[in-house]
Structure formats: structure tokens, C-alpha cells
Length: 90
Image (cartoon, rainbow, N blue to C red):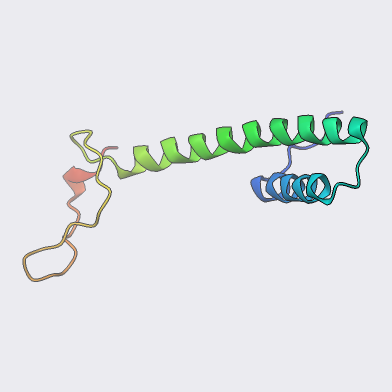
């Protein structure tokens, strides 16, 4: 049975631990290489997760016309604009 995938935070903590071990200079060359390889793997996994999260946020931030909005729109009075039901893309 495969182990459950670690959370983003767990992987980040593991990467931080590996970096600290490598920085300490206390690992042998072989152990340093293993730690480096694991760190590269964790970095790729973390970057992939961040890219996925960014894509999800972009989908949620698109309006009905498919345009990406990154700031809150305000009315002339300074209040946030009300969202109309027909503005919801689903």
C-alpha cells in the first residue's frame, strides 16, 4: 500500500531540514548527494503544487468574459462593487 502524499507544508519542512543538514557540513559526501537529490525532488514537487494552486486561483478570478481580475473593483463611492448573478461564470 502506497504511503499518503505529504502535505505542502510537510514537504516544505522536509526541504528546510535537508538544507540545514547540507549547510551544517556534517554530512558525508554520499549523504550530501542523497540529501541534495531528495531536495531537488521536493523542490520540483513544491513548485508543481504552487503552479497548480496558481492556476486554480486564476480560474476563480476570471470574470464571465474570461478576463483575469487581480484587484477588487470599487464603485465611485469607494465601496466594493456588488457581483451580479450573471457575472458568475458557472
